[in-house]
Length: 123
Image 1 (cartoon, rainbow, N blue to C red):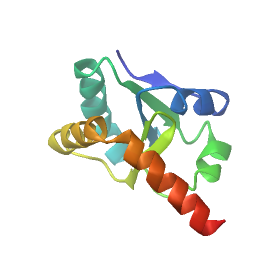
Image 2 (image 1 turned 30 degrees about the vertical axis):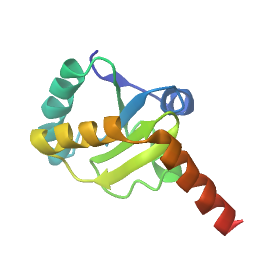
Image 3 (image 1 turned 90 degrees about the horizontal axis):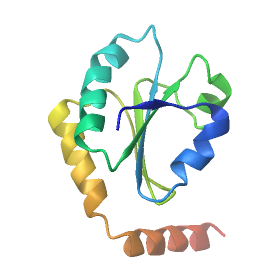
């Protein structure tokens, strides 16, 4: 599956879907974003079971502000609606592949337990 551009309106439903969703926050004027784009596209073709979304931070400024995107590219990974990775900076292909493996290998029951504990302690 190729990458998919999403808007603010599509963001919630995209990241809350079952399975793994990666979101690349980028802008046309950003050099590192342009260098990362083919790496991200290639990974999307090699991992058709994962949703690879892209958000143009220029077109979706409100969303970028809500998510506190302060540097681009920023990559977020969600699994079953839970953000499990959030990092600014372009990843080399090998690092992106390693990230995908780590997200695939997560014990989501343990992740949900940690999220619940964090929410309870902040409560």
